[in-house]
Length: 290
Length: 135
Image 1 (cartoon, rainbow over the protein chains, first blue to last red):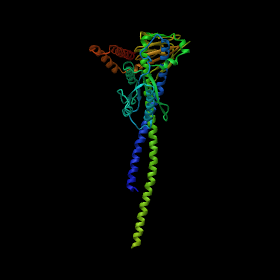
Image 2: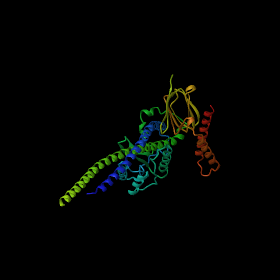
Image 3: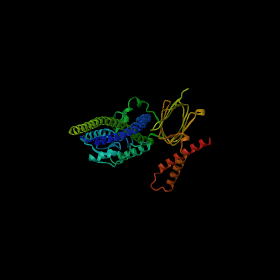
Image 4: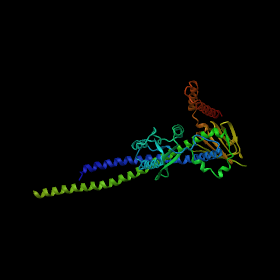
């Protein structure tokens, strides 16, 4: 049985840990409030932009092409994994990586050569551990999501797509649903393809759009911005997921610490009572001996 | 009388959502005014001043470029950055202008089109900021 002093020390250490987890929870809660507000605030732009690109692509019809729309047979793909830098966020990254492995295996089974571009420290470690072919990588992507950075990152992807011979570029990130639930999601970033379907049918009827200065001049720019917009939204979602997951993880850690403390206090009281009883027996048996 | 439903959006947020009789925008080919009943249009925007409404209720903004989508009296402005004249950081704009100008002096390995765009942005920002201060 551990001595009273040992137990007291352990109680102190658990209390300290609890202080830390509680502080982290509060910080995460504040950051989460901001991050989830950003996600909501960014939605109108994303939706409006998607709609505009859809109209534009529909109006462009068959006679206009852009290097960002080319759909080659898929032989080589780049999977971008957008993870957090820090841990302490429950199974957030683990789930993402699990899904990533599945996604990659499925692609490999279809005969696609897959390379991984990690964004975030955890993704880097994941990529290195699994011996995937890495394409550089960077950290601190989710720290302070801003559009400037998203544009730069999107530029990188476009360069990879247009210059390095990838047929597809996918982006895996954690979609933000609520503070309690986040789900890994993979989207195709390049070629910009999913939009064509969304606008076929009725929308094609009013394809008589006046485009200034001209559809050929602006299409590339629009598509690049669409990629940036996708990357930006994924970053915001990823950041909100990170803080939400950390908030819940730290909350349950704080609660667990309470449970541990409760049990250790019982143990402490028992040990104390045992010590008192032992002393009493010693005293009474000592008195009897006299 | 028909009115335009105007939405000004940036990637980060909804800047303003309002109705107006007239919207003036810095198109890539020059400033343009949009009135109700405008034809279906998508246009690229340059850096410059965006004006919503006229007369008393006029609102003026700086926009850094982007796109506008005009669809049946719904005007959606999709810009990278939108600022009100009072929020313009004059010092930063001046620095940006100086930086852009210095790129023209030593133009080895410089993306001229980008430097030109940066210069235009800085100048238009400054122009708007100073007219507001003067008024």
